[in-house]
Length: 126
Image 1: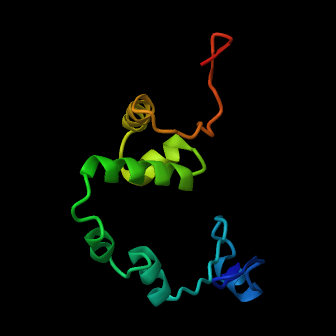
Image 2: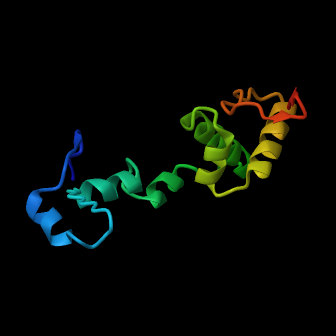
């Protein structure tokens, strides 16, 4: 059984009555008791300003390439340099992420190193 709050999550066994109800079913029993403050979750999803519209209004007049670059780099920083995680969060492919970062680097921008481990291919690190 899992119980928790915004600051603490505890894991324990389900009570005996719950287990007795499932006895003989031949399946594992998983019981989840979860409390969510919906108002808090929605405000976090909308961001500090309360909505995406409020956040975007501050970008009016900005060059879209600059906004895109900053969004990609900040998302990459948020993901600790993990390009796959950042690409997934942004809804772009890892190849697109790699190409964008290569282009930023060619323009003289500092691009953080990847946090992903190098892959082994025929005994060589790529």
